[in-house]
Image 1: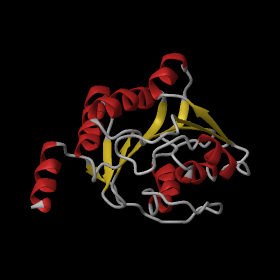
Image 2: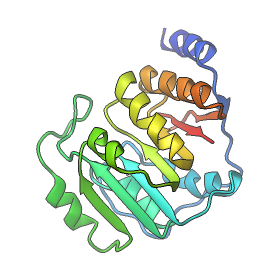
Image 3: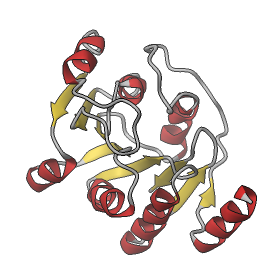
Length: 195
C-alpha cells in the first residue's frame, strides 16, 4: 500500500531524481541522534554538481546540530535558525538551545540563532550560497520558509521529502512558483534540492 501511495505522490509532484556521482564523508562530524544520518555523504556532490560557492549557508531547523556540522565542513559561515524546543513532528520536546550551543562550540564558523523562521525572514534580506529547510513538516510552513530560502540562496535543500508528502508538495510548488528545477534524493527520508 505504501508503494502505491509513493507512486501516485511521485506522479502528482514529479521531481527530477538526483543521482550523486560521488559520496564522501565530511572530515568533522558530531555524534548525535539525527534523521539526517546518511545525507552527509552527498552534500559535497551537490555543491560540485550545481557549482555552489562555499561562503555562506543558512539552515532553518538545527535541532541538535548534526546537519549544521556537516555544512560547517564546506562553508565559511553557517547560520542556524531554530526555536530549539521541537515541534509536533519531533520526539524531543523542551528547550535544548544551550545544550546544542555547547555541543557545537568547537565549530567556530557556526552561529546559532534562537528564532522562529517567520521572525527571521521578516528582517533578513541577505543572500546565501546555500540554504537548508528542515522545520515542522507541514505544507504551509515549509512553503513559506522554503520560498524565502529559495529566493535568498543559489541552492536550497529540504529534508524529509519521502517521509512527509507535504514537504515534497511544497518543494514541487516552490520550484513551479520560482521557475527553478527541483530534484529529489529518495534515501534517508528524502532530500529535495531546488536550483
